[in-house]
Image (tube, rainbow, N blue to C red; front, side, top):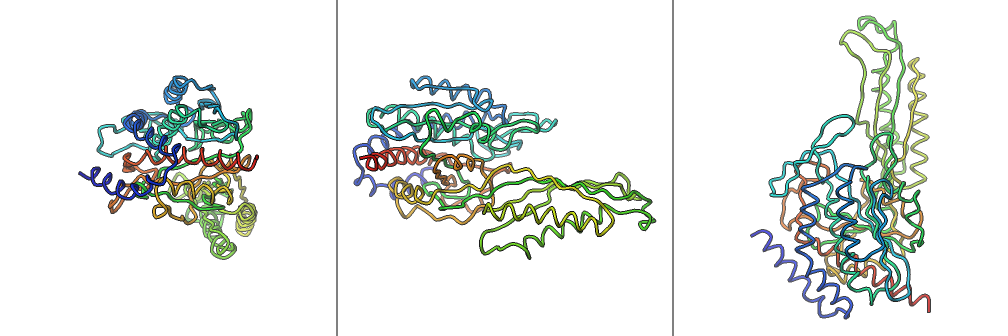
Length: 435
């Protein structure tokens, strides 16, 4: 009953748009609707059979088989398990990249659906449950369906579409390369050179039929840091005989928060510094020799990112020295700021309005979550947006990366239609500029 209500509500809001469609728009809209059952079937298959980063062997095999069945030029093994499909339209035009991430997470699912994941995997040496707790199963299926629709419309297509199915967005296993950075290292943005690239992310807390976006900086950079504090071991009853690395660590944690609250121009952009792991000691009455911390930094401005790095190193060093301890900091950048090219964003939003209606396009605030789609934007104008996956009227949807994460797949066809609209509109605009 809930899904029927969802479909009725969405249909009522979209009917006025249909009367204004061009012939091409009517064609890809109809084709997307025709393969909707197949789209959902794919999504549920991938959901039930998730694979961790750099281990997406069966996932990439199914993707490649589908793209080859369409007659596309297919390259496999890109960035270990990635797949790239190339579709050449019959009309001259630009090279457009469309990207979907394909990996799952070490999260045990507990949602009561027939296609629930029961998969197991190994993560950092431990056996874990595996699930698509971030919705990448929907991204794969949307892009596979988009490839099918656009292939059937090859005669109307301007230029070339490069379908990029990327592994390891959640981060490669320790000691391995992976993700968008490795895709780019292996030349995915060239041969042929991509003129613009588009990506989407399903969102469990945005209603089906709604699209969110933000021009400029939209998602944060993600840096992970480690801090090693070296003190002097002593008996717990005689702290004056040693240097307590646990006390020093607690002072460092407090000091890191003053970087956010007292040293960062938060009116320019947000900053987050979180310590997620702290380890020290083996016995209650022994002050240990060392302590260890891990955490993450999120920034939405590249200059602030560099500045925060320097302030962290300075804060840690001087707090440790003030107590007679030593401390070292290592910072590893996982993603850059996901930046939406402003000109491309505004033209893209006009395209998306044709798909869901202007009343269903929402300007989003900054997001302190991170995305390695950010790396593609270093090589071509990029636009990344959020597609609603929440059943309308849901009161308390679970966030991403949690066991109760749920996506209503009745609105995935909007992702297909959005990608098609973006491809055709960008191709038309490119052709006009070239005249």
